[in-house]
View 1 (cartoon, rainbow, N blue to C red):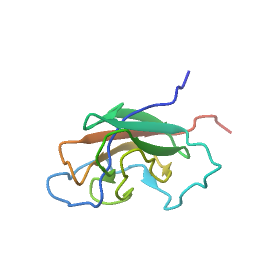
View 2: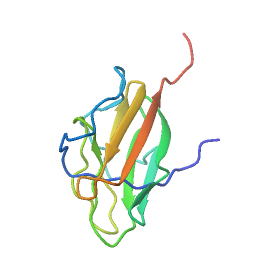
View 3: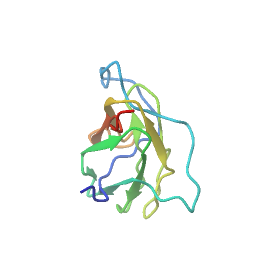
View 4: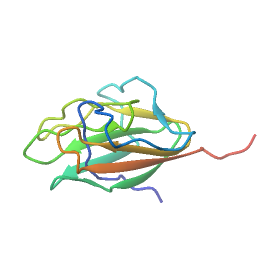
Amino acid sequence: MMATFAAGLLAAGCGGGGYGGGTSSMPTSSGTTTGASSTPDVVITIAGMSFTPSSVTVQSGQTVVWKNTDSIAHTATQHGGGFDTGAIPAGATSKAIAITGTGALHYHCEVHPVMVGSLNGTSTGGGY
């Protein structure tokens, strides 16, 4: 049973320093955002300067948002580029990021680099 997830990690831009690596088949953002009426598949909560959960399995095609319950702004930025939520103000929720592909996707908060998290993209299964 998949429950709505909570975690926090937001980053405003990819600084590129020290975050390299990853798999050759990484999930990526589709570059689109979901509208206000769309419901995200996964919600990661930012609280106490951390993402909860810090690691989440996401099926290819699902959308992820970060909800900031801290009193300061955070961001979620994919290591090495890909997606960037931009600053998420206290009490706000990020735009939705659509995940495509499979493999490990690592991200961090540009404002607070000690805040890190990961998404593990899996295929949707279901053979044809």
